[in-house]
Image 1 (tube, rainbow, N blue to C red):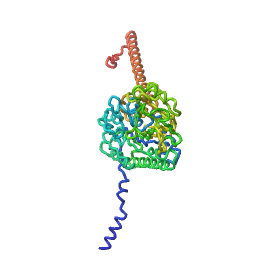
Image 2 (image 1 turned 45 degrees about the horizontal axis):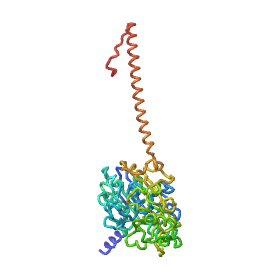
Image 3 (image 1 turned 90 degrees about the vertical axis):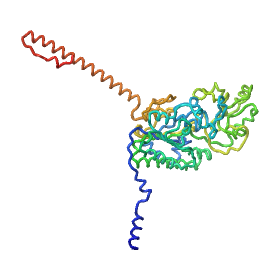
Image 4 (image 1 turned 30 degrees about the vertical axis):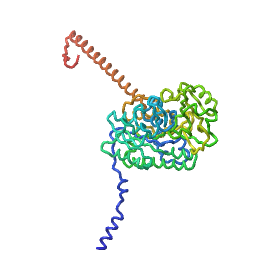
Length: 467
């Protein structure tokens, strides 16, 4: 009896663990084009060169990479994430910053505000809604805008920054394993942005985080491969902005140049007395617009715009949420009312002309070329690109599919040209057929008459020709 128990013990000892069983995934066959969109917040375009990133490198070898992408101004998290999924500039979709003021609503928008998730703030149509209008399903993890009332994805999670990165990936995988899997999936990760703010873009601590998100990418790639999905899904990995290095010697103190009671800065609640950021909307007090503007204009390293003078290339000024004056610091400078301790070493939000504000873009899958490096393009073009791959009609947007055609195995205009060529060829073939038919009939009729003349009559049979 003891001998039998011993053998049972040995048998269980060598049985595969639950994890081993789980690793042998059932192969999945998708029946529709599928896109997985991943964002690593604050992943600057050149982070790929700072440390070894074998999993990102694998995507580059098997897919496409942009030298960088040009994000929208202001280069903040919520505006750019919403641009990516709507294809709209910030002035069009209305999310002009992580915080803003609407004079019609007489309300301030910021993360956690009472009406933060009210659809009245969010214009445009996110790709998951476009997808669902085409009777397809979507699954989204934490993407900014995915919890807005009235435009939620089919499947989504409420934001929880403590949810481990691998569990976010697993949620997407679980959706793909369902009986009716979504064709559009997306997930947001708050690194390396979080660490970049704390330690700056050039810190060894940040390098560790780059390795971490590369490992998360590797986990996703391996999991897709185990399920037979790696060659079926179109994976896009990108970001919203880069990160600039800060230090305490580059501070713009507004109180040194003009009285603080002349104006109000649109800032986070609780921080309006000692705000620190790279740009601000300025609302002058009644009758103080001219004086405030003149005083601000002389401040070094500060770009000052009346609303109507904001450069058109920012695609920013045509919105009521833009205040009468916009101030934007030079790259790597910070704006504050008065001197205070700078407790962060990295920030973003500057003009999108600065290279350290630019994010990265990688993609692989059946729709994309292999081992291809693209010139930079604007992130408004990602939305029409995804719609094209999904086979759905995009909503009105500021992007252009032709601007990213170089990424695709089959360029969109080539498809149109092929269809046009087929139509032309069909028409020509039909005309040739008619001419040949007419020629044959004419020949036969002529010979019939000639044969009658010489006494040789052949009944050709009228039924042989459909005249």
